[in-house]
Image 1 (cartoon, rainbow, N blue to C red):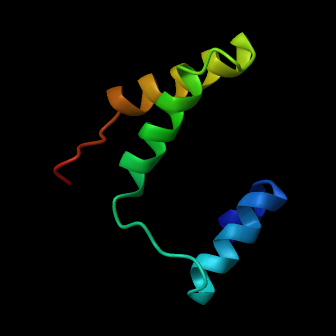
Image 2 (image 1 turned 90 degrees about the horizontal axis):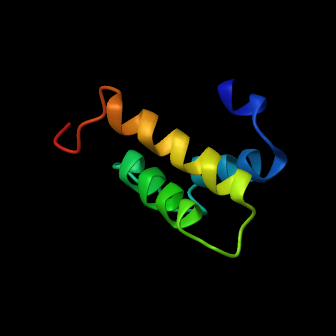
Length: 69
């Protein structure tokens, strides 16, 4: 039950996807990268939050992730 390691909001949406109340995104990695990009480029957020989003996105891009997969 890997979803239990995350915050309540993530567990809630996870349950909604599992029950069919929320849509499942088959290309979820692209959604994650777009979301991290929005966070990293948002000047209204604290710099440390933006830095963490940029670090996570860059590491994901360097990993085995491929949009063709």
